[in-house]
Image (tube, rainbow, N blue to C red):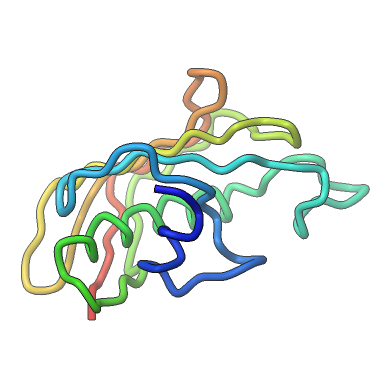
Length: 135
């Protein structure tokens, strides 16, 4: 799914849309996507040359919301909680930030899944639980 199709599902827009493309989707089960990081990102400055971990988590949460609401048309997904977040590297300008989200369980409007972000096949951030509330 290209960026326009992603924006048809998620309410996020520039500069806070953190997904450029969804390459695989199994609604309510899993999704894989990516973000291309450029030198022109609003979060890049002279002092910071990498994407902050908080925004990588936001990208994973957006992919999780995308996965959750695919099976519930017309719903919105909100990041509700995180557990077991571990940062193991950085994503710099010029990198392709690869994102994956897998649903672990879903009940009564809450979807809990695990997420992983990688660059060049190397995991740079992992979250054991990303809870998405759908309304």
